[in-house]
Image 1 (cartoon, rainbow, N blue to C red):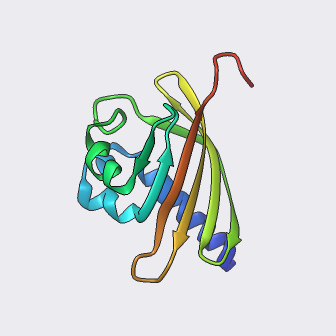
Image 2: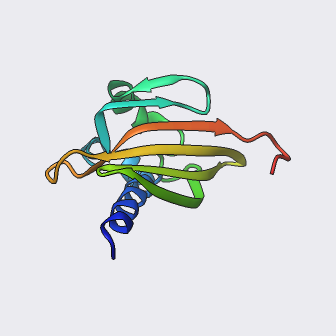
Image 3: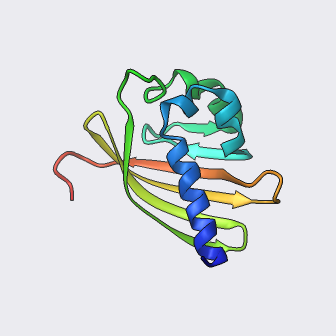
Length: 128
């Protein structure tokens, strides 16, 4: 496995972990996956920071074992530079689709791969 393939696979693994309610509801698990400089533009149009996500994620939809879950599909990734991976994919959450993009960065071996930026864009019903 090449270093680039390994980097993409690790970023994808982190992204998938963040769709797991067991991870989303446990700060000790999810805080390791977010870069301290994290920023998100959510599918709602709202902007979130690292601090926002630390407080918001456990109570957000998709964080409950018994509730709806994010179903990701067609995840692809590319290494933009050493230590920087760009992922794109689509999610379905309780019938609502969104196209998503994330930047994952690795600054050192100790911290590993962490989500640096994320954006979600709603897909209107009937759109391809």
